[in-house]
Length: 98
Image (cartoon, rainbow, N blue to C red):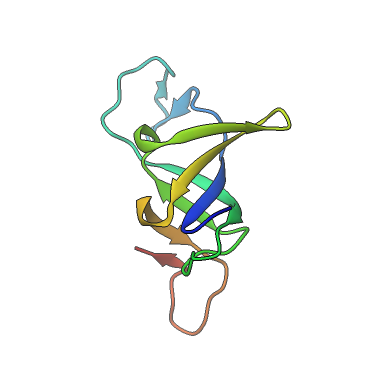
């Protein structure tokens, strides 16, 4: 990976979802702009805030997909990440960094 690039593997495919009230929402239902979670697979030399294994939040409309060894990944710039959900917690922190 070069510069400030981050390679991520998207969490599960968009499919049928269930609302908090138990209503089934089909995959074909039109949704507003929705962000997606992914797991960091590789980072460039100039990336400062994320590490391999972190979960990140990004806009799936601004993505560039790449296929490596029959696996599909998303290539992003570090500045395109909206949040990091990290398991590296210290006293009083929530684990979600916006």
